[in-house]
Image (cartoon, rainbow, N blue to C red):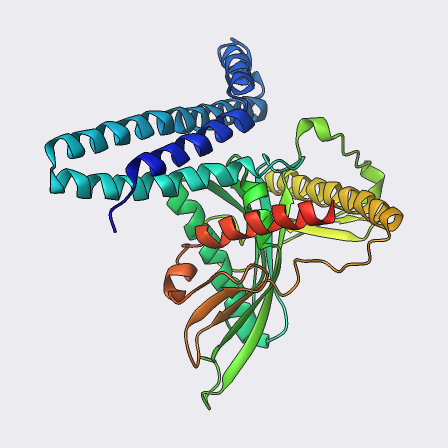
Length: 370
């Protein structure tokens, strides 16, 4: 059946117009102009951390603006290509137009998903913590597989990652790991990954070759911003230092550089051991602690609202995805029912389709609950 190009292009233009409206390009340009002004200030690099934040934010917003504006040009070019193919009755040009239509539709869908990330913290960078749960050594190995999956996903998109802490298990895998994904909307995008992940496979650690089910938990938090005002008095935090464990370079495993912070009022504990100095580890651990306190405050507020609404529903995040490697191969999201058979691709970071379906599912659930 021949493609109805005029109808397809009209649909693309309608979606694109909606994306431009929701993205508020005037506001985006105004923020870019303001950041450009800050970036050219002669004293910018007097505060290195702030300077890095300004330049990183500027680069991200400029890339986002370019991405949206270039999409409009791409739709225009597609229309010209279609007109050329039709006027010359050229089969090769028509096939090229088909391929370009598929590619534009896919990228436009990705842009549209970004517009669904309208939560208060969705534009933030993300702090991801992975923990092995039930399943012994298989669970620790699974936790490491998930960590690699997210790191490969970030690498595919060119996102910078900072690993703050990795606690290695004795036989294989990891007990837990915490890392930051430094990208716009990383929190909004990855927050749909929060919950319990389940792996079913023939255990490589069982000499009888039995099938094993193991679990790992994923927690995703927004990175704290200067405007969040998370006050953490020094007398409410116990600081312990110790020697780093696991693989490490020069000085990492030879000095008491690892830091453990315990927030006494809440009992929240965070650790950081992947930086070279105790001071760097303490600063990184404090950022993680502030993020956890910010999330706790958000959950407390949400619990109060739910109590007022009489909401007794459980968390949607639990048991959110199943990875089956035996007796068949399939990865399935238990909330959206999205599934794929390419398990090796998923573990290699090909999770965008799961992220997109999760974001769309969450928005639908929010509208239903409203």
